[in-house]
Length: 288
Image (cartoon, rainbow, N blue to C red):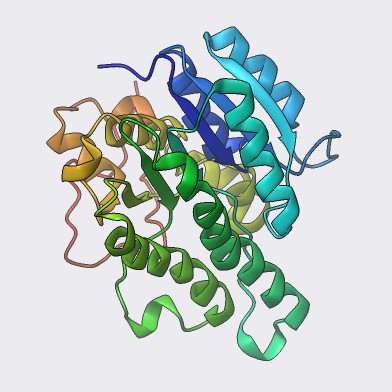
């Protein structure tokens, strides 16, 4: 089973989780459309669409770097058209682009709320909407959101209501689009990490290097996404997937290889339901 020759349109793929998903597919020989905003190097963030494209090519895939702001309707439509023109179609869409601001409501700037809503919820819906005509022509089409299970608990909203509304909005898109697109055979699923993932956002916003060491690498989400894309779309849709539980069910047993630092206990991520039990221990491993 392979993604060789498949075309993936990935938002926010210049770094982090989006790039990791692209690199995993590229190792199969897939075509990766890097739809992101970063065309020039950022002082605090590694990677641009062009460095990502070079990494994709080195991994064995074909890359198409496109400057895309998922808030811009015309840019999204043009990018999807360019992707289909370049590679002959689109098989998989990954809605990875996301904005985060954990301010409580009283101190949340409404411009920040608008940004999160426009990128997370609206961007996800719009990219998916404009991708439908291309996915309808694909052999095994998938849409994947990097968004959480719909666990409607007060604790997931209190303290950062604005962010939670915008992030759960992505998951509501999964719920609705899975139903809307089932008849066309287009799978729509959500993927979410059990633990924090070592990305720039975790380092810069959630706790620096200490939080990075308590995280898993983006490779765990890349492997989980790869396994999702190999599923028969007509039979696997409307799922809210937790990365390690899903991979364990797929036969994976070595989860230590995803740890940044095995001697540090893993930090749980937001939004993981209490009744979701980890398939392996998240505790620190003995050093030496």
